[in-house]
Length: 280
Ligand SMILES: [Zn+2]
Image 1 (cartoon, rainbow, N blue to C red):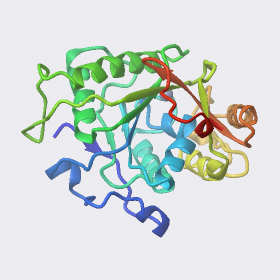
Image 2: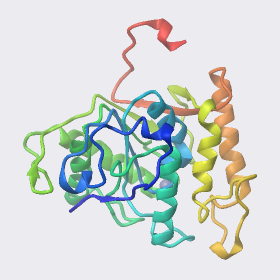
Image 3: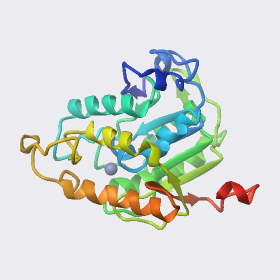
Image 4: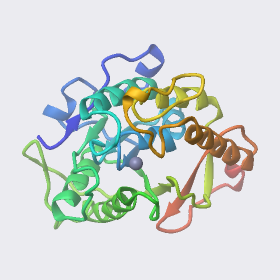
């Protein structure tokens, strides 16, 4: 089976109400998952939590179905083992409300996300399996080559997923072409000017909980304590980085008259607006 699952065993009643009706524990192994509204794709297992977890949680609370695809296991990181990072992701899934089977890892080698036919096909399979209307994915430019490579890979897979000429299977079953309606990009360290900002104020505290689940990667003031035993300090492991991340959410929120926000850029043309008042 191509798709591996890093799932969660326990969900709060709040989260249960948003689990797609057909979810079961074998969903990725034996049948196609229910279509989702939004598919968030990231290079590393903590990227979604850091950059767009508020948007993900808000979408779930609004009744939308959300799936996450991590391209790598983050095994080249300076801190934390592959196993520990899987445990951290499972804990974060509980906090975000991602049901079992709705977070997959296609296990491309960390640090080596190549635009190869094999890797494109892996992402095509995920897009066709979840059939999202909207994809959230990394922006084009960043200090980390994996993030830039993930951008290129998703762009190619987005196109190929809609082509009948590109054959793919999932559990030996032929998949149908599917091309999502929209793709929106999120920034990592190199910030782009967003085209729109999602108000995540109501989900800010839970977002910090989700980041605190990644104890090997981050230090979240008030929630976790920096542990030297985890390994050497990294670009993202100290309080400084988390304070910057929080300040960034606060700045983006301020720009739309909210407390905290997450920014996105459009990809593939301008947004369609039917009613100007929906933008207020
Ligand atoms: Zn990353």
